[in-house]
Length: 299
Image (cartoon, rainbow, N blue to C red):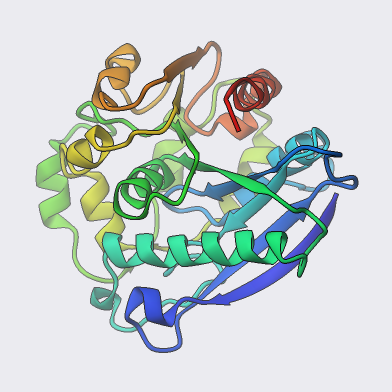
């Protein structure tokens, strides 16, 4: 796997001066011969950064989504959302919104596709694009696809269109209580949701130490019931929905119905897996199933 580190100017799309997205473009060692290159644009969840997609922590081999998918000939663009990780965090945070962040992600997607098709990054030729979002990133890829049609297909991992129950409080009440700013996630409280009991404690601690603040606007929207119901209903590309046995949706099978305009909605529920799927013992089953799903669709 070859990695190109990027800083992408998204000031125009976001409407925020000097706004930049940090991203890692992970490329396969050999490009597909005679076939379109599949680019997976991957958006992380709340409290995370793009390393979620390339969790190469010392002593823990085989936890990198990017390594696994590039070994199958895919390219992976892992993006830090605006206000998170190494991307720009505007002040005040109220300059940001879900729609502005989505527009920035669309600009970054198009920048990467252009760099692949004009051979700036590689001699790729034709490129098809899959949007992949985990948790809040799922909310964001749904928003992006409905607003900008950035993707040829969509993967929504661990995002619930059903009412979420994360702690013992009403999500709408929690959302109303969130104050503007960049917020730390209560990671210790979330361990039972994020990790199944078989995830090594040292890996959990490494993951938690690598966390990021989250813009309040994203936390508030994620807790607002129905926030992307209309957006999901407008999506007309194929959709892959996945939840772990322990996850944000109380009714995973009901998630399919929210994408009613899509011609092809596939659901996967992975046993013995919690919300942070890339750390699960069965993570490779998800990654392989996703690769097969992409290959099965027209290009």
